[in-house]
Image (tube, rainbow, N blue to C red; front, side, top):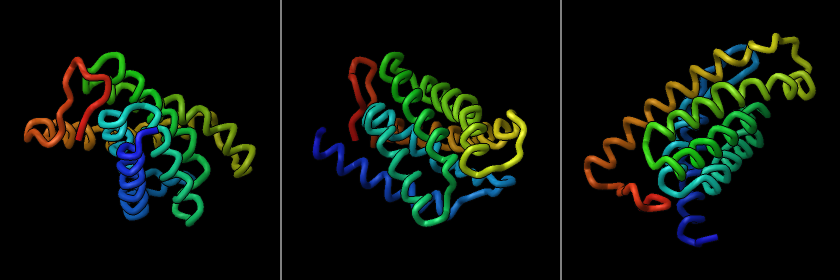
Length: 169
């Protein structure tokens, strides 16, 4: 792994942890954090899917260790990070980041959270109880990330070119 990209990932984890700890919306026994989805988009675009998954895992782990997150943060954030990174890697369009995050976190992550909640949290919940909370959280965070990324590109702070394999800061 590239040392520069690892350092950037660590910085994004720190920002994601602090931001996700400050902006948490409790919905039943799920604590949604829109900032995580924004960080997934930025990391996927700038560093690629592997670093994006690492970032999502790092933020989820820190949030769980400090009591500001739940175990449900792992499937949602990591699947969204992976799919946004993979879709962007192959499509090279910013909308593919949005689609990957919404599909990965908002739908797949929410459905995978049901058995995890039943097993580890012993909560009575319907299968689709997670879908609205996860989807709304990922939608809000993804829209913020999309708008931020568009502004960073417009102001030439971030350069994402079609022919590159990963973005540059």
